Amino acid sequence: MMNKRINDSLKMDAANNNLPDKNWRVWKNVGDMWRGQVNHFRDRVMAVAKVDGRWKDISWNEVDLKAKSICSGLLALNMAQGESVAIFSKTRIEWIYAAIGLIQAGGRLVCIYHTDSPSQCEHIIRNSDTTICFVEEQEQLDKILEIRGNCPTLRNIVCFEKFDPPAINDVCLLEAFLELGSNRINNDILQEINDRVQRPGLDTELALIYTSGTTGFPKGAVITHGNTLFCCWAFTRVFPINENDLSFCFLPLAHAGGLTLTLFSSISAGCPIAVAEDMMNTAMEDMYETEPTWMFCTPRLYEKIYNKIIGIIDEAPWFRKYLIQSAIDTGIKVSGLHQENKGVPFHLRLLYLAYNFLVFRKIKDMFGGRMAVPFTGGAPIAPKVIEFFAAIGMPLIEVFGQTETSSIIMCNRIDNYRIGTVGKPIPGINVRLAEDGEIQVLAPWLVCHGYNKDPEASKAIFTEDGWMKTGDIGKIDEDGYFSVIDRKKYILITAAGKNVAPQHIENILKTHRFISQAIVYGEAKPYLVCLFTLDETEVIRFARDQRIIYQDFRSLTKNSKILEKVLQIVNEKNQELARVEQIKKFYILEEELFQDDEEVTPTMKVKKSVIEKRYGEIINKLYKLPKSEFTLHPRSE
Image 1 (tube, rainbow, N blue to C red):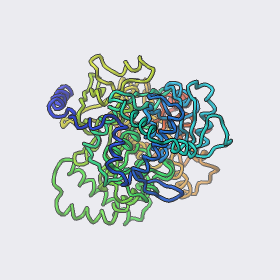
Image 2 (tube, one colour):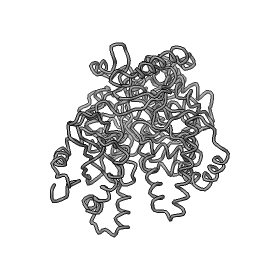
Image 3 (cartoon, rainbow, N blue to C red):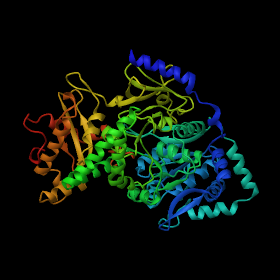
Image 4 (cartoon, rainbow, N blue to C red):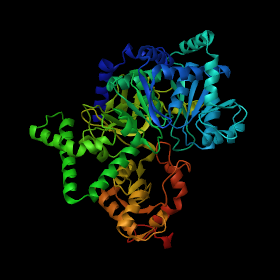
């Protein structure tokens, strides 16, 4: 009854106050938005990126010049309006040039993760009918060349960096491609570009963003210009960023969150973008140097920072440990009062200011010192991690969304958040819970136009009355805050008939600095078991402190002292779980999960079906262990 009452309340709220006004239709399409912002901001900074090892401010006009040259080059390759053009690269400034260029040429942007395998690339290129592909460097070029013969629509490849051999049919270096396009620009070309920019409407396809593919090949969500403009409008209405902010762009731009929330939302608000030099290795250093004010990121980075700081606390001298822990406890109290909309007593404010100067400021400096709004989404995150960031005065705003909704459906707000929830719906949409608790969305301008070349899957994501099924089980509290329990397909039913959400358990286990990944199983079984991967840095540090003799990291995963340490961690974390959720047996994998092995998605979501198939024999052996044993020892494998 409560769910029905809250659903009715939300529906009335949407009908009365929450419907989108015409403000989001300021621009005809995304290309028109770009043109409007360039004309407005001109020589002001649009992007900050490393060029020849030094950070450089790049103006809106400079970015536009590069994009126009790419657009002109695409016209030279006879790219027709609506043709699919792919970008196969990690996040970098050239990705942005290429995306804006192909959009102005009227192309359909096809997003490929820079780590995708040749078979995944082949699937995406064939599914999208890609004709031209931008690739980053030799590694990506080699993958495309490997499958090129199986992709009949692919005509041309443009490589951002030098490649070998230097002469390959229909493969061009970006530098030469820019020169080609620049040399062709004249009044006729500019008129052609202008005509192409004006042609798309709100229902015109803008991009194919491919899903994570946790259960098979990814599906291409058809994202329209209207989807994107509406998403930008809703996001910037909730979080009013502007030209005085600086977004940090390092999430893959092939990801809906990176593309829409970071890139296009920043453009729509006139907000400059700091582009990470190396999204995989230099993110923290880049943040420190560029001093951004907000960013969107998947939970992995925040979890690592949290575990690193907890590790520092654990190993600190007693007084420093007391100081840091006291500061965090004070921050949690202050954050709790904010969440309850209560005033903070003067003495507590004074104490918090002191702790901010002594402790919190140093943590914030890791993010550049100006970070006001770090967003997290794309995968679940433990409330304890969010609580920590809220305590230090840098509230971690959780966003819930999907590729099919350009990454956002609901979120917490800076001045109205509740830890452990994903907040409330963004403006202009309706959200309800189905009878089984599935979160469903009614948002014609937000939801994608199905999946490319997959009418059955496109039909399957909608209910008979037109609501999009997210596949996530959720709940709503009395104040209208939503919480996500788990993916519907991952809910376990034990042999005793108990429903268990493994995501909740995995998140709690990962809050220990030893644990990198935790994968829980137990469908139709008497109890739960878990596969772990360990944080190599933390385990090696522990081994050295304990004077453990070892050959390599793999040998450490079998070491008796390491096994005992992990057992201790499991027993501690079990105290935070209900009896039916507790882990009884576990196994430590010898190495981290890798996307190249198709064990995780580019956003580090575990492909459970792949892991279960790969380690199914080990999982079965865990259930055959005697009661006194907690794991498989080397002799029993």
